[in-house]
Image (cartoon, rainbow, N blue to C red; front, side):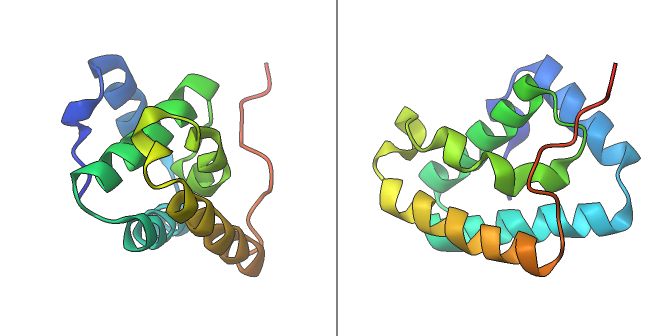
Length: 114
């Protein structure tokens, strides 16, 4: 599994808080999207670093559910973590996009309205 040790404490706290308040179906969607991605771009250390970068990007952007994972894959393609596997990251993004459409998931990140 992806190690949260690669994240700073404030990002970890946000992730854990999101997880705590998510519905069981959103948790399942998050897990499924992460599994699809890791199966395409690799579940080795480099693959896990890409996943961590997606999580970091999500938390910086302020998404309120980890089920938005698939919406952030494209945002990390240009990072150093994803550079070596750009084609695989883009392929995973397309597969996850199909998953999101099939499961009627939002095409926009969930944010709290202030």
